[in-house]
Image 1 (cartoon, rainbow, N blue to C red):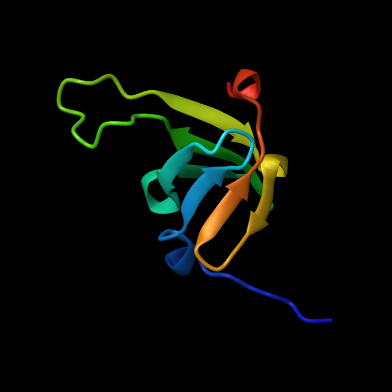
Image 2 (image 1 turned 90 degrees about the horizontal axis):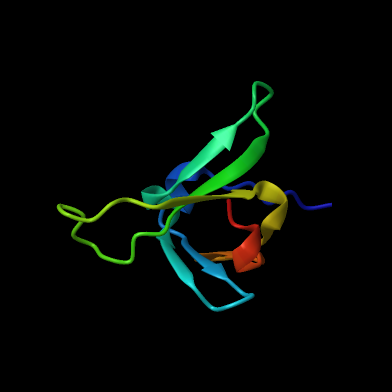
Length: 87
């Protein structure tokens, strides 16, 4: 059995894509992850700001459970979540 370990320093450059609607949520390094006291990944916090310039824009964040992450590929993180399920 092959174990495929990935370091956060590599994954921060991965783009997050929702296969449900095709939306892109920038790179993991521009978003956040909540880790529990045991080191398990629990929640992905997505920055839903479409504009790169946030001087006058209000930042909008959405939380999704880590179970919505379907695949971590070579350069992408694929999530599957309905818009209504974004918190």
